[in-house]
Length: 234
Image 1 (cartoon, rainbow, N blue to C red):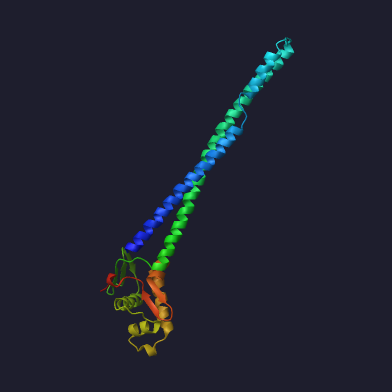
Image 2: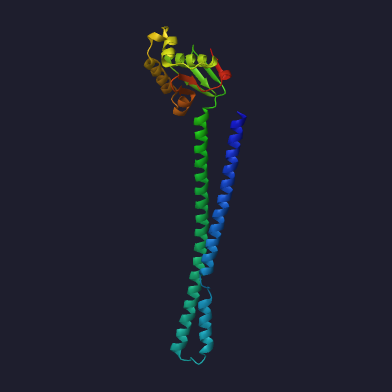
């Protein structure tokens, strides 16, 4: 158990570091891209400066049409300046939006990776069961804080597996069928015990719980993948 806790803590620490570095990298990249975009935009007052220079350099323009043309140029410069200011605001908002999306995507990806690693660890080590209680009278099985109401046959199957686990034994399908039916193992078929195991797994319902709780040992049989001291049969 301490090794499992240490493994989980290390996994969380690695995940936290990855997320921190990733967020920092995303922010730096987007800040650099935003700075490049802002610096690439022309000066908002550049057009107005050119119009002012025209006024200064062409002070002899006195006719009504010439003055009107200069006024139109000045108004165009003002409009151009306002458009550039609007572009800067839009770019800033889009950069904030892109930053939020990239950070969210990074967090989701890291979370999925960590969950996949955790599920893989559970599949390799088995489900962590702190207590398993089999109540034959009420056809109940209590796994940690989960209560399962099973059929009588399923309860007998898990009870046989529990007693075998307490003795440190692995039971074949024929041996399971022999204990339940009262026959000799030589007179029982392996398929009958395998059918009982399948029905037990189906009765437990949760695929992960059933597959990891009742393990199949190649060429040996079936065993409960939990600690012997956590089992109680009543």
